[in-house]
Image: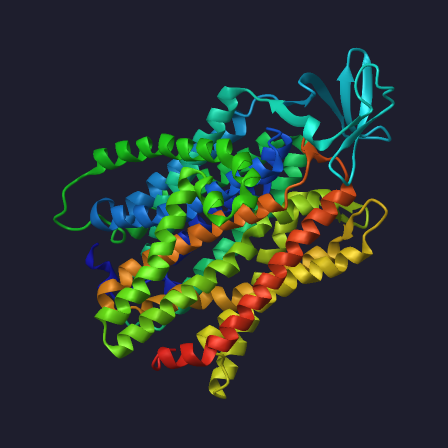
Length: 588
């Protein structure tokens, strides 16, 4: 880094802050525009265009997002040691732009669904509109409408049994699709480019924000608040537009919009002129490793492809062996899952054990509290991040999304979270300040507990609201929005204090390692979230459910379980709260 961080600030100001903050705000806004626009569409794209079964699509989604949260560890380290934050942001933006645009224009034609019945293959036709909307088995010149039954069997309406069976037990059929292997390969390469690019972009633009302010500058927190508003502003715009465009013109144009936003982020940063010339430069005296870094980064893309392809191939197997026990289930996970399980367990057990035998009492207690809070953060984010997978599919299949005459696209429901954050974040900020003045501000462990209660109650509220479903087993949109509201309030309790508290509780020589554990935990939560979404999977044909009642019951069963899990976790943390507060030894 340069000495920019030690300078008071630029002479010209932007709302009382250094002028480069405006550049970083808009750059981050457009980058998040791209990412959240893509995220609003991804799970639907996997099940409707590539016709992946729910278990496979949710597993892929969890693997992808876990890698998105994991790679910033590496990208931040490379930038600090060699690349510099500014160059890393530019390189990351180029990779992500390429990923979004490749995702937009490499999908090819929709995969062709088929069904195997007693070793015989039949094509499946999908009618999506009108009174005849549904899925049909095609046998010669005849079409038989498929109905799903509660016991897992299917009925082929109109069949007399001479051509195809009229009723087929669950064990005697299997739906799948004929996919273009090149399109699947390009899908994973696209996601790999986004994963690697995000690893460079995400941590390093935040680092540059921090260097705008000299040490002790009381504007720093306000500057980061403004910067993070760019995240929510970008996500609101893209989560409104991308699903609309995808519904009207096709998924490729929704992803193209995300790519356009990412290109704007790159252009805004690339052509900033002298505005940030003193910020984010490579470390002085360091060797130029640019060529090696770029080549290594491009090599990382096929590694991401391999991990995603492995997740696709093992998704069904892992689900089938779930009943054999936790050891067998973990062993059946893809390579990414096995490694993350192993590393996470070692960290959660090893760090407290090491602290007990190696540190003095105050340092030991604080480290143990940091690990405990990290564990409960995984529970929160595992439940919260159902937004991009099971909750989006629930919105598509079992939610009445009409607002008057307007049919809200399923991907658009994700907009509720950033809307609530933008509305209520200032209120929470004032609330904490006022409570602090009266000595009533909740401690960090209590805020974590409140967050867990809220995310749990969000799912239970949705379960309660399902009692008011219509004849098509569609739940009123209000209840899904209310669940997002509770989840967002939980996020405002937990998210702003999480990483900051980890850095305060960790001993100085291990702050970097504990930050790594925190980000690893975030990635692990994304992966576990994908597993939970797999248990909410239901039988689909061409991305459409066979039985809306079975689909609703399946979702509600999982939502009720994880809702109780969130509340029970909150109760446990509430019980531990006095001990944790004592173990923090005055850290606030």
